[in-house]
Length: 346
Image (cartoon, rainbow, N blue to C red; front, side, top):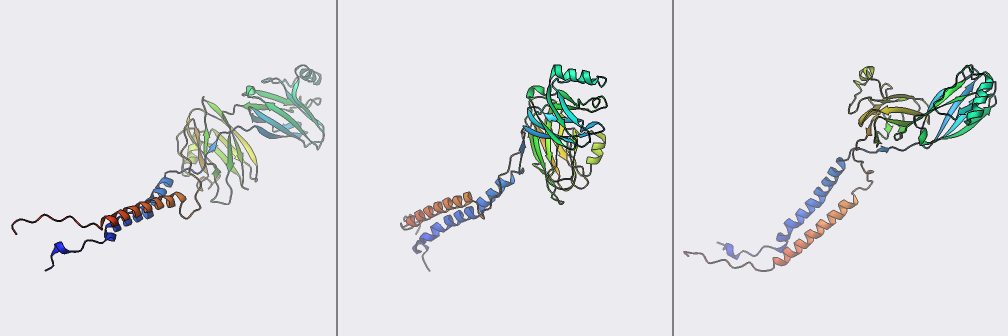
C-alpha cells in the first residue's frame, strides 16, 4: 500500500486556485449587483426647483363693446411685464394704468374728472392704440407691490363710463414654479418635471405656476387642496366633487400655449397635482409639489456604457489582489511541509 506520508506536495496552482476563483466571482457578480442596487434606491428622474418668472408678456385685447379682454390679470411680484395691447375694434382705445395701488375709480366720473385724476396722480402706462393696430406697455412691479392691485382704463371719453376698465393683481410669488407639460400622443402625456419644490418659509404662501402645453390637446393643472393625500384614477373625480382644488387651470389645446396658475398653499406638505382630462391621469399625467418638505433623491442620468467605468476599475483591483495572493501561494507551495511528529505505539 502507498504510504500517505509519501504523497507529493500539492502543486502551487492548487493553493492559488481558490483565491483566483473568489476574485473572479466578486468581480463578475458582486460589483454589478452592487451597482444595480445603488441605482434602484433612486426613484426620481427630475426635480423642478422654484424659480421666479422675471419677464412676462400679457396680451390684452381692446374691443368696441367697449371692454378689455381679459379685464383681470395676475402677474407675479418682482416682474417686468410687457402688456401686448391689440385693438380689435373700429375706434381708438387707450390702456391707461393707474399709478395708485388699490384704488378703484367710480364709473360716475365725468371724462374731465377722469383726466384730472391721472393728471394729479400720474400713470404707470398710457398707450393709445388705433383701430386694428397693436401697442405695447412695459411696466415693472417690484416686490413691494406684492398683493396690490392697479386699475387700468380707457380715457377716451365715455369708454370708461361704459365699462372699459380692468385690474392688474400683483401676486406674491412665494417662489414661482415653472411647469412644462408633456407631449402627446397617449400614453406619453406627462408633467415635466413631475416633482416640484417650493422652499417656503411662511404660510399661507402664494405660488405662481407657469404652465406650457407642449402637445396639441387640452390639459388641466389641478392641485389637491390637502397635503399628503394620494389620489388615484378611480377616486379623483369624487374627491374633487367634495374638495375644491387649490388650482384648476385649463391649458389651451395649442402647442406652446402658456397660462399662469396662481394659488395659495395653506401649509407645508406634499400636494398632488394632476390632469383631469379623461384618460390623462391614468396614463401617468400627475406629480407632487413639495412645499417646505425635502424632496426625494434625484437619479443620475442613465449610463450608456455596457459596463460602468467604476465596475471595471473595481474588477481590475480585485483581480490584481487575486494575482498577488496567487503568487504568494505559489511561492509558499515550494517549501516542504514540516515533518510530522512520530506516532506512539509503533
